[in-house]
Length: 125
Ligand SMILES: [Zn+2]
Image (tube, rainbow, N blue to C red):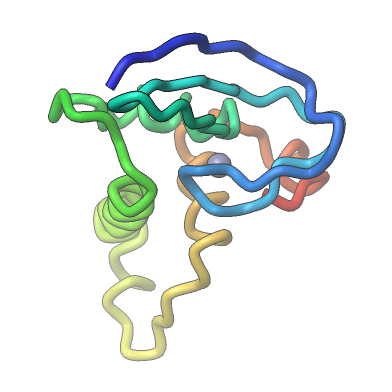
């Protein structure tokens, strides 16, 4: 696979992030890549904060790129790590229920200070 371009763009309409599968809002700056794979050109779009998170937790390390499934796996694992390290009592309690993926992701983004609580409040990611 070959990367043809990698640009930051302002969204003219809503898109779906290829990593978290959540919405990229109109007007939001996002990453837009063109890739060529055996003669086929395809576009990959992702949130800037999703890329920042992958950098932060070192998810590029397998050298193979991070697929949508990988991303969601990494984000969920990170959520579990943080919960068991810093909120173990809640996490281990019998009443604990996993929030949905969007909430897990927001929690992880806030924990790593990639987005502030104020920023997170204003967006639906
Ligand atoms: Zn995303």
